[in-house]
Amino acid sequence: MEIGTIGVIGVGTMGSGVVEVAARSGVQVVARESSPELVEAGRSRVEKSMDRGVARGKLDEAARDAASAAITWTTDLGDLAGCDLVLEAVPENLPLKLEIFGVLDQVLDPSAIMATNTSSIPIIDVAMGTSRPQQVLGMHFFNPATVMKLVEVISTQLTAPEVTEAATAFATDTLGKRVVAAPDRAGFVVNKLLVPYICQAIEMYESGHASAGDIDDAMKLGAGHPMGPLTLADLIGLDVCLFTAESLYAEYAERFYAPPPLLRRMVAAGRLGRKTGGGFYEY
Ligand code: 3HC
Image 1 (cartoon, rainbow, N blue to C red):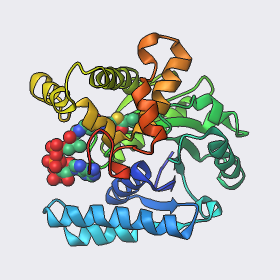
Image 2 (cartoon, rainbow, N blue to C red; image 1 turned 180 degrees about the horizontal axis):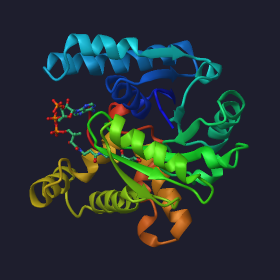
Image 3 (cartoon, rainbow, N blue to C red; image 1 turned 90 degrees about the horizontal axis):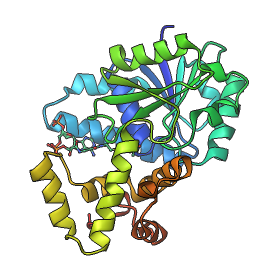
Image 4 (cartoon, protein in one colour; image 1 turned 90 degrees about the vertical axis):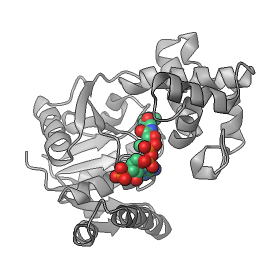
């Protein structure tokens, strides 16, 4: 399966990163948002990020212009009709994802691959919303997607082996990522380890075990992590951390996956981390 054109649905933090990575890798990209305002916000996110690359000497102007020209922006899911692979990266809301996959099922070529970037919804639940679950799999990118080298590729019981192979080859050979095959179980590989660690850090902070700065510095300077767990939670988004912890707890019913009360309260208060200007730290 040749993948020369991809669609990305949802151009928020994760989707915009994938749009940029793909366009810079020479892929034609159709980027879809649900309103003209969100299209403009997505376009500006991608362009600012590439301009930063130019300013830092990591990207030359011709490459930036070629990448920009490779992206088509739209609000119409019908414009994804010619895509070889479509990645959905909308918020973690199963009815919304099912609605999108239902439309994709109508418009995409029978051989097209349908991928979701979900971090916490079982891939099979999304696949069963289509008439062709053998074409559906998970491709889970990491934030910031332009920098993080990993993609988890998640096959369900029904994903066709050639679909998994084509998605893996695309992520590896075209996008230059390292692929890890992960099972369709809550947390896949990374979040099954990472989210309980972040939840434990939140509990330590809430109980006064150590300050936020001390917890973060301890893990940076004592364990060699690039950022501490509370800074990382702010980067990921506390809503995403909560949703993922809830899905892990629902799947495994282990106490250590349960989201800590402070995480729930911060999400309820709209303190979601960097994207809202404040979480464990102010931005
Ligand atoms: N967007 C795009 N690029 C970014 C960025 C951002 N938000 N933040 C940093 N970068 C780029 C910089 O431009 C720089 O690029 P360059 O080397 O080409 O110049 C490079 O990353 C390094 O940046 P800095 O030197 O400014 O800072 P650091 O060395 O501290 O790196 C970091 C920043 C890459 C974010 C690093 O701190 C890191 O790896 N943190 C951990 C991130 C992580 O764990 N992400 C996974 C989260 S889990 C997830 O996404 C799954 C979900 O389901 C929950």
